[in-house]
Image (tube, rainbow, N blue to C red; front, side, top):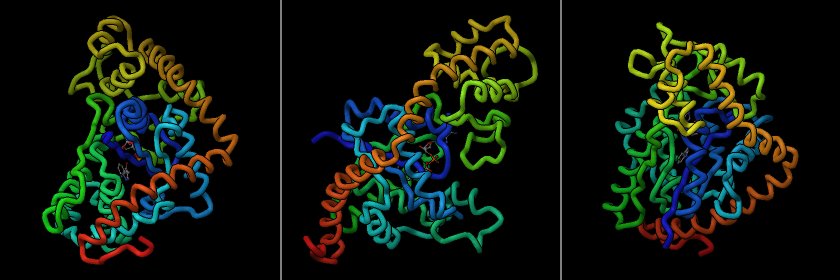
Length: 332
Ligand code: AMP
Ligand code: TRP
């Protein structure tokens, strides 16, 4: 059987350069080798305050972004998490074998609940358990994600191993596929902070939908480090981030770029970087806008994806129901 890959993205806002370089871009070549499942994780979005009037639009945008970067609906199963009810069902079972202590250690929970430990929604606490259910349902071997998800993948491995040893071999224990470069793209205006959809600082993030002028403007205003040399290194976090972005679009290594820009100042380097990013994003942006012109078709593709996902997920649930002693699944 062909090995499987599963990954997910929250429909919380326009996908950005970090999502693209750290995750989506790597999802495309995996289609050659694996059976690929890519999920718009709408239930995860309910773990922080959301706007019900905007949610459906965000989901469709998320799907458009995936197809625009080259995820191919004829080769990948692309679907909405809420359209496969098995995700919430398995999440419940895994919640019952998960431990308070291990969930309390999750960095993402600590960061997102900061200052509101007692009033934050309980869903944010169990967020990584739902994420574990997402992957384990499909018996996926690989989970291509950015660096920020490493701890969540560790937890899903622990849950799979714990379940398997308590109830018998049921789940494949998945592995994180984290790229060597690009796994943590930093904010343009603060190289100590990751580029994030939740940022309220407009110049910190390049969105996949930004036009050429906006991309150029944001890159021009990006912070740089002291000194004037275009080099990467621990004392040059801003330049390291910009050189990483350049390298991922251009194909040249960072040492090659340092050589190419030896003697040029930050200004010339930024002009060249803006060009490379604009050209790299151009086809993605064009395809995205074209796809967004036909939301009916996007919804049709998502329904097809959901039907394929449910088939696999339900197969796993039949086994899970028996293993934990709930017996035959209703309708099975
Ligand atoms: P999210 O937007 O949080 O749903 O993330 C979707 C995917 O993008 C996940 O695999 C993240 O690890 C990845 N990702 C998000 N932000 C960044 C970033 N700044 N750099 C690299 N990867 C990222
Ligand atoms: N937590 C992930 C993020 O914020 C999104 C996600 C949900 C996910 N379920 C997943 C990623 C399953 C990989 C596999 O980026």
